[in-house]
Image 1 (cartoon, rainbow, N blue to C red):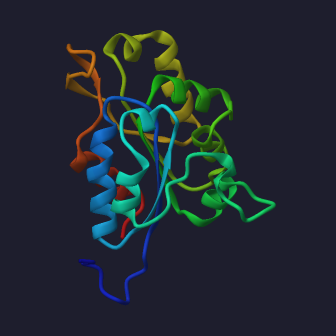
Image 2 (cartoon, rainbow, N blue to C red; image 1 turned 60 degrees about the vertical axis):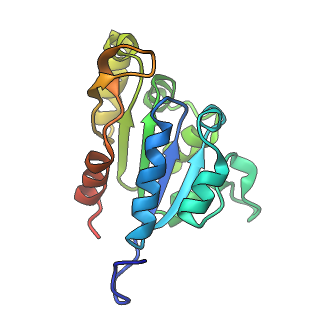
Length: 187
């Protein structure tokens, strides 16, 4: 049940899920946002859909899931433009090394990267990847670049990774992601 009062302003948040082992955590985040009355739009990349399905996010958010620039039929704009114009905060989680590299270089070849480039509001990025990938100088330069460009980067944390080892690269937990959203876009 919605815990916001009827006079509260509903937040509009886009959750962009890229492919990584931490995708399952995003179901809890999307559910929590929707339960507190936020209007949640979920963008799911092709690689993310190999970890978790559209129907999960549709059921939890109450909104159709966007998987392609061409999902939106409100011409002349693509889905990325409509999301950029209607949502007030963009959360990218898990943010893979691939996504972060694209974002740092301005590459827009999928729904996630095109939405990131079109979005003008606050952007929270929660990285998740193998610890060797995280520790590469290239990844660290890319993280620094998107941070310098204004993205709020949270995490990653240290712990058990989907590559079956302990290390830095674990997607932040639900509470940390929710706190980052709330601190940059209070309800």
